Each structure stands twice: as C-alpha cells, then as structure tokens.
Image (cartoon, rainbow, N blue to C red; front, top):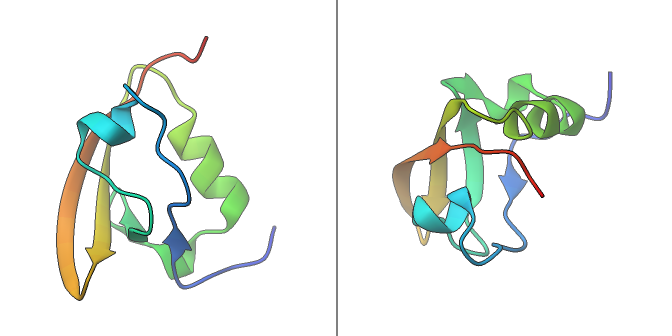
Length: 78
C-alpha cells in the first residue's frame, strides 16, 4: 500500500476532460472519492478509481473554504 494522505490537490485540468466538465479547478482539494474519505485512500487507489472508463465517480472537494460535490462521468483515454 502506498503513502496515505488526508487530501489530494488537483494540479491540472485537461481541456474537455470529465474534470473540466464537472467544474473542477486547479487547486481544488479532493477530500473524498465515492464517499470514501481521502484519508482512507492512497494515491494508487485514487488513480485506479479515476482511470475506470464508463463509470461515474462522486468527488467531494474543497475550494476557497467551501465544500463542493462533483460528479465525474469517466471515459476512455485516447
């Protein structure tokens, strides 16, 4: 199991990506993935979850002191 973190920061958003379509922004902090707190996940687990095409993933993110929910409709990468 990899190193655990309490949260993960979004460092880049690809144009036209599911993240952009969901309204995520660079600097947003991922606090939970599919209702699992970030502290219960390691980076490898987050990557695995976010690389599944054809699924919907729910993120809880922090932005400027507020908590937001985002729905990602993941698709295959080309």
